[in-house]
Amino acid sequence: MNQGFSAPEAPDEIIRIEHMTYEYKREGDQAAYVAVNDVSLSIERGSFVAIIGRNGSGKSTLAKCINALLLPASGKVYVNGWDTTDEARLWQIRQTAGMVFQNPDNQLVSSIVEDDVAFGPENLGIDPPEIRRRVDRSLSAVNMFEERTKAPHLLSGGQKQRIAIAGVVAMKPECIIFDEPTAMLDPNGRAEVMKIIERLNREGITILLITHFMDEAVRADRVVIMDDGRIAMDGTPEMIFAHSDELRRLDMTVPFTVDLADRLRRNDIPVPQSTIHIQEMVDFLCQYKSEI
Amino acid sequence: MSIQIRDLTYVYSENLPYETVALDHINMEIRDHSFNGIIGHTGSGKSTLIQHLNGLLKPKSGQIIVDGIDITGSDVKLREIRKMIGLVFQYPEYQLFEETVQKDVAFGPLNLGLSQENVEARVREALTLVGLDFSELADRSPFELSGGQKRRVAIAGVIAMKPKVLVLDEPTAGLDPRSHRDILQLIRNVHEQEKNTIVLVSHNMGDIAALSDQVFVMEKGKLILSGTPREVFANTALLKGIGLGLPPAAELMEQVRQRCADAPRDVLTVEEAEQQIVRWFGKDKKC
Image 1 (tube, rainbow over the protein chains, first blue to last red):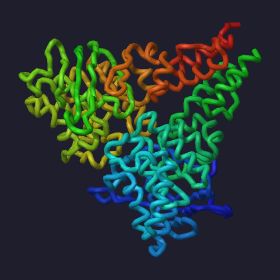
Image 2 (image 1 turned 30 degrees about the vertical axis):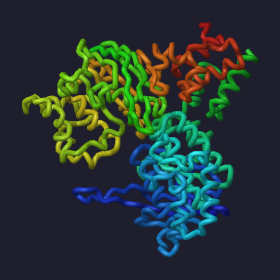
Image 3 (image 1 turned 135 degrees about the vertical axis):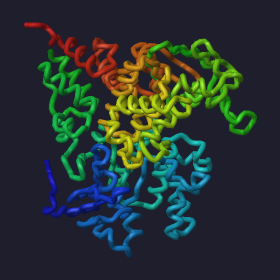
Image 4 (image 1 turned 120 degrees about the vertical axis):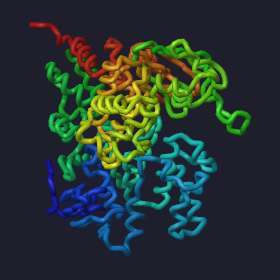
């Protein structure tokens, strides 16, 4: 697995993290607690990267360091080449790398959907006609245009989360960091939000998705596993999920399809190693049945 | 302890513009010592229903009969209901408030009017049941703990009241895979050890299928389906129609069956999928 690769200069990287360490002071005894430990990571522009790992492994701290909500104790974080400690670039950095959090109720500020989406662009001092255009386009992008004049508190969790996403999209970010965006949603809400995330990625926005759901992680084109403040594994979903023993050691579950594939292989059914999506398993089973 | 829910109806904002029938003539039978799963998407009425179970909400009409007593009656003491039925809310760790873990877990039992020694014994027992080390954590602040630990402390606070019915609203939401497994295991343990009745609200169809004796499906304030997991998850079209989906194993076999009609049916878990597929391929023959 690719650990701490800092040397090769990726030509088109939007985020570059170099030997970053972040420490928290524990409440009470003020003992230092290293949340992120000498991590180096490069994120390619336009990619879809899932970050998984147990609670307390440093995922969220890492994410907050990317849009300068937190600053590293040592090492460097660059967004579009800007150093996140450069205060003069702070707003450009946050505009480039927007963030969506777990609880939609903590991210909505207005009593009307479209006002909420306009909040970010207004703070950037953008002309009203342009704000209007951005708000309409952002709401359409998350399939919430019809609900634009409603009150957010009357909407479902999934709808509220999509408005929070629209609020970030209206800032025209190049990258969006999602910190467990579906944790509080029902199956419908989760599916809606994942569809929007994939669509935004297709439209060219770089996606960082922190999640505990392996079925979401398999949809990324790269999976990074954090463990105890470090990067434990890094690769394509096919590579990562082929190592089910290693995943279990890291307290991760394997996606259902991978679990079943392992079990079938033990019964002499030759499921290809690359089978991680449910559709691939369906294809294999039907194909294999027709051959025996 | 059994619960009969009869014709339960509840209306939010009655006579106001946003009047909503949150529960619409619900009839349910929760059997003694059973493990019950409630599914339904956000706004379907699940949380409204469970808030009725311990008297947090009073119905517009209908009855909830717990062990022969109608708890919706005006002469019923709330303390008596809450002794019988413990409710663990969503994200219960947000409700931790005491200086130490021990004090937090003791809060409920103390309010039941138990003696100091009795309370202490219950706190020990409850913390052990949720897999936490009493001697290590008792005097720590609950706010210093990890997310998974905080949630266990919060659940211990309800278990310490020894409810005969334990109701949990999405107890694994937001947890990592390990804590998710651990919390489900501890619910199983509590169920076995305390011989209580469990009502589990969850969005995870796989968990519901694996754990429940009985599954109830809510949609738009109505109870639209109930039965064993096998009976309920056989209603593929209905469940998909309301956006709930199936456990992953059932979903997979459903898709396979659309292309190969002779593929196994009635598959709910990964273990069953393995067995059935092996048999389907004729790989189970002993040589």
